Amino acid sequence: MECDKKLCDRCEIYEKEKMDILFKVMDNENDVTLTDGKGIVIRISDSYETHYGVSKEDMIGKSIFSLEDQGIFKPSVTAVVLEKRRKATILQKNKLGESILTTGVPIFDDPGSIQYVISFNSIDIANMTTLHEKYIRLTELMSEYNAEINQLHMKDINNKELVTKSRHMTNISELISQIADTSANVLITGETGVGKSMVAKIIHQKSGRVEGPFIEINCGTIPENLIESELFGYERGSFTGASTKGKIGKIELAKGGTLFLDEIGELPLNMQIKLLQVIQEKVITRIGGLEKIDVDFRLIAATNRDLKKKIKGGLFREDLYYRLNVIPIQIQPLRERPEDIGALVLSFLEQFNKKYGKRISLSPKVFDVLEKQSWPGNIRQVENLVERLVIMAKQNVIGAEDLPEDMDFSRNRKPAETDGSLEEMMEEYEKTIFVNAFKTYKTSVAVGNALGISQTTAARRLRKYIPDYISYRYE
Image (cartoon, rainbow, N blue to C red):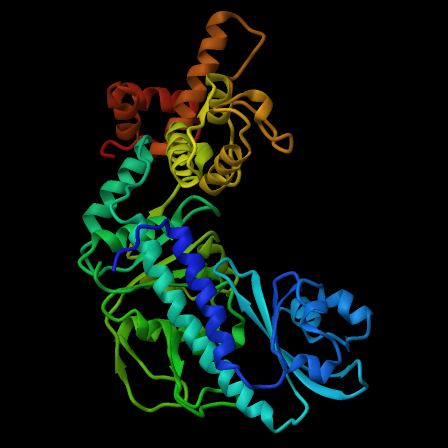
């Protein structure tokens, strides 16, 4: 059923429901504590007052570091989890002097930051098994909710297109339309923030698999010892701490849809071998299982790393690279396609005006300044800045005085300058145009088309300005 609320509101509802489910699952268990990613206590179970000799009002909203200093508990398992970024079990003492076995578990958000920490305390160590089983069930429930939220985000980008002001992005858009409805593997490369994830989602939306799931996993944010179970799943009781019901893996979840492996360059070598086998055979076996499970999915991978360098260094398998690189999509950084900057600024301005119920516009001077930036953070940086400007705007037109002081607005793109004659300055400027055009379009034919000149003229200028340029008769 469609919801007329904004996507962010719907996601917040799901977040609240997840927390409610957490405390329903843990109801009547001993001492459950939930903190945010900074260690601030959000909720605690009623039993906490009995076992720790402190009221809930004295706990909620307080930092676990402050509570630790007060001797409410020591040491703090949440502090250990925040420091080590992984599950931890320690023996701590409470205010009453009792020793309590405590386990803390981090919950990560999509970018890989710790969003919450759940700690489970039990005076009776035998009860830890039950608590752990309930934790596994909780994580499964949260995975289901996260999958639903992911589908909401997919609906949000439905019918959206790439900003294609530049020829480079127009070519990518045309390529997406050409390959979307095939089953060919796609490897998307480019710097952080250039829009690799968006391109992957648009490929899925334009494909015949649009009704299937879009399962995304960031290979760089999952601990190496968990990546196999995340991808392949496991059978019940297959290892210590495994759920009694088993778990379905991301590859299996992507059946009939698209599996997007972001930051594929961070995948451990042992998992690269197993992924290669899955790509070749389209069959998986869960950890601890014997049954071979058929999987039909479209694989899209992305990375900001130079995989060829990683291959030379022995950190990435060459055979896997060629399996992934059936359809390569290289997304240029924003500084190499400045034509897109203005269109992106206007697109984000419209998006955030709608989101925050405002009618903010940019002065011509501000728009010109934004267009002339190199944007090292690429599209993500543009998006974040425009959102910030809209939120912080004190009037309807944003002026130069509203631009943040922590950004360098002095690095405007200018034609190359020289102290020579007008003819020399014009020649230097022409050189800049042709060198940049060749970096973007790669061939004299494409350069000629982009600049509105013949291929012969383009090739002649490229030979003049680029010493190592080789002009092929047929490009």
